[in-house]
Image (cartoon, rainbow, N blue to C red; front, side, top):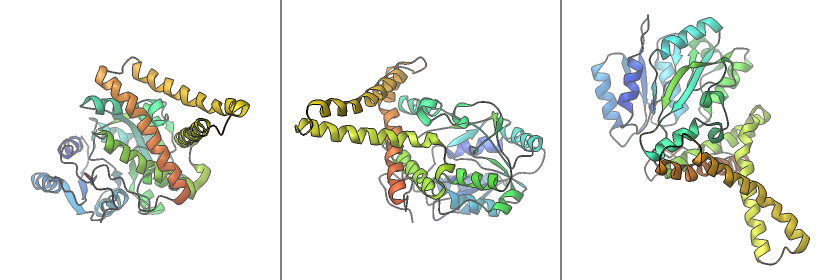
Amino acid sequence: MPVLNEHAYLEHAVASVLAQQLDGPSELVLALGPSTDGTTELARGLAAGDDRIRLVDNPAAHIPVGLNAAIRASRYSTIIRVDAHSELAPGYAARALQTLERTGAANVGGVMRADGRTPFQRAVARLYNSPVGLGGGAYHGGGQEGEAESAYLGVMRREVLDEVGLFDESIRRGEDWELNLRIRQAGHLVWFDPKLSVTYWPRESWWRLARQFRATGAWRGELVRRFGRRNSLRYFAPPVLVLLFAAALVIAALQAAGLLRGLAALLSSLIYVPIAAYAVLVLAVALAPGGGRIRQRLWTLLVLPTMHLSWGIGFVAGVMRGAGDTVDASRLGDRNTPLP
């Protein structure tokens, strides 16, 4: 479990891991980044109270660096990746081990069940769980059990990780997708089991959400630069939306300046049709059954385009110039610079 500034979530996340019922021995390795909110002190206290918890340092703070440090420090033949911003459902680990054995897969993942405590966080969670929000990946909305492109978090055979290499530490986001690509290229199976469930708690504020999605989009753009069409077509929808908005703004400015007139102005106005359709979609999602009370519905009107446009803007930048030192600064207060 890589950990950075998770004081409000860490104790519950750790408790959900330690409550898993397994026949054999287990351990929880926490890779501690340079937190500033008391998370490190909390982690040390938890480790002092349970000898199954082990701590390793992750001074770079990057997720794949922390994951690799924790994996190298681990002692057992199965690696279960967990997140400090989530909670495992009861029976998750036992079910995952059974699925590994039953399918012969190298990596097994389940469903991310986003949840929220505030109207804003519940609005984000609802969109995480919707195909409209995150594009319909199986682990966001569920689906049939079977072979998968990637796995959420992942329960992995250590021998396969040793064979293909651990997480690529040059990739700050999307590192799980890239690892699963190498696993599949090596001839191994990645498997989706919808009966595996993890509760995920989204970011708590609009600004943090926008930061997270911009960084994630930038790294997806980087992955497109590196791996091209191995990336699913659904990843290209948000950048297309961004380009449509940009084109609409340019055309609107030209029309206002009188540089587009007559038939040219009429034809160019067709660019507004998909923009209007998207606005209707956002409104429909906000008003749809299950949208919660009025505050949650109002947040949905802002959250959905924030997710799509932030991700799309990041993606365009990532494709054009690479992700570079882009980091997810959404858990760093006001900081928006590369971590130490």
